[in-house]
Image (tube, rainbow, N blue to C red; front, side, top):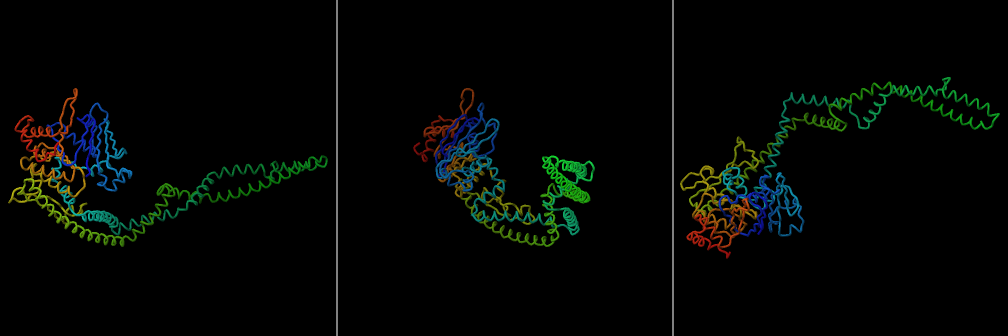
Length: 570
């Protein structure tokens, strides 16, 4: 059986250091009022991932730490949770699971599972699978119809869980359909205005839109025409230096030089080669001159096209500002506008199709809600009978208890509630012949404690949570009722590990393990300590619970009598 083996607490509130080794079955915790039982439970809640404050750190320590060592709990954990914990196969097939959490005096929290860091939310999810802490305030939540609905659903057979998932899907689908219908539910004039706007935007983009390659070419041409005047000026200046039609151009002067060398080479053959080189250079200059004249002609043509290029670029800039920035965003808007135009143009057919789909979903939801209602009504009858049976065992024999399940009407606000159309409420009559009334109106503290235990004992048979923790569930009861409540706790201990805080001797006597919490001074500081009681110690503590005195001989004798049926030789 999975269980909590050890709990180690360091510098947590009033506890400087504490190591608790726990047994199977029913563990009772008792002690004087204010001794620190709530601190012990707070440490359990802390390791279970509940919210914590830096005020928990015991001064002057820098951090508070809690370790919890569990045994044989891996088979009880959901497979998806195990995968998110990233545990090795060796760990999963092992026996021990170690939880660790700390909080420092600045409020920073660290959580680990088997030494690996995890988020606090993941630790909380794991803690919810390992133990339930049932505090006194849960008796108050028991009066809430939402909590009552959760209890009933936990008792319902498996089909309900699948139906609830289907219901959630239908509900989400309905929300989306209603949203789409609202968008399509424009009147004809509004639809026409929307179509006109979309058509204008599509035409505007279409007039100036181009491929990315064309845009790159346009941008290059635009940069060129912006420098066109300077390019023309500098090119003409270069051409004037080279143009053979000019008297003092480089080509004219070079031609003259070549002619002079040609005359001189008949007197000096060495000049012949130089003359040939000058002739080649002169030919090259003439070729470059022709190229420059052609380039100037092209510039003249581009100058004629510059107005068109500027107009195209200005048109693109407007598109980029309105629908961009950038080609990708303009293209995306263009496509979406075309799709929306087509959708809006055909909105009447879409509208009718959505209405048809909505009606089909409503019919499916009605059938599903009826199926869920029948499951809950049947489960409610069984749960009512089971609770009445347990309450009779807990000294409430004349009680009548009923789980009432009513289906919401279309006008009710919870007609499309997340969990279905059922309104669940617990009714009770604590005295025979009295009318059934809502639980919140008539149940006393002691009755609520017994109802809560009855519910927990019934539901405990349905889940696999290894550890159940009860904080003063005996509040408001005594005598035979307390004895019966203790027997029920001990019975729970046959299937689960149970820890219960109590002030009642009859219940404490039934423990498989009894832990005593007390305070003592360590120097000038108060510290909470815990002691596992042996048989003699249990007798003394029961005497104190009975009379307030651990030395009263009659109380000690009665304590011994109470312990006798449950003594395991400890």
